[in-house]
Length: 169
Image (cartoon, rainbow, N blue to C red; front, side):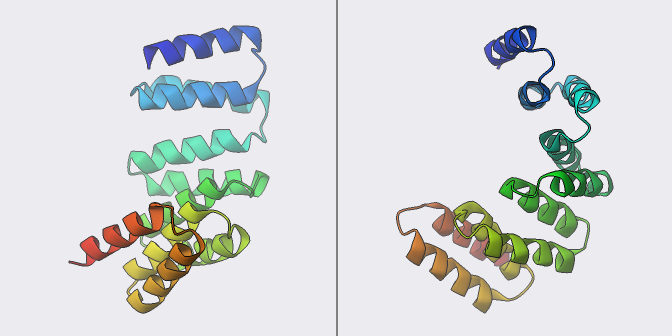
């Protein structure tokens, strides 16, 4: 990670006004456990561009990782309000909502996203898993079968089905 951070520092010297590079460096810093530096990079990205959706997404991810769903949800909603073409943002918002006890809202987010991003196997797997976690195992397994049928060589639907079944005991 140290080498990655040094390379991203070089990127910032070459293009200091690019908020996306700051978001990338924030991701590396977060992964290295340098949370305050990651926040500083994200704040700098938003100072350059208040409509930088990846900065809000990353801030929401950090808050969610640290268990602060109340802070994560508005950051993730802000990211989606700016750019709703990032499937991961929909997944992260649904996870934050579910973790905050709003499983019904989480399912609505993923229902819409799964219909919109039918090509995104990972998003569809999270959707099916969340349906199962909400207690509708029949519908969940039907979704998993559809995903396997459309992407039989992709390991994700098998993995997510196993995770769901393991969580149910």
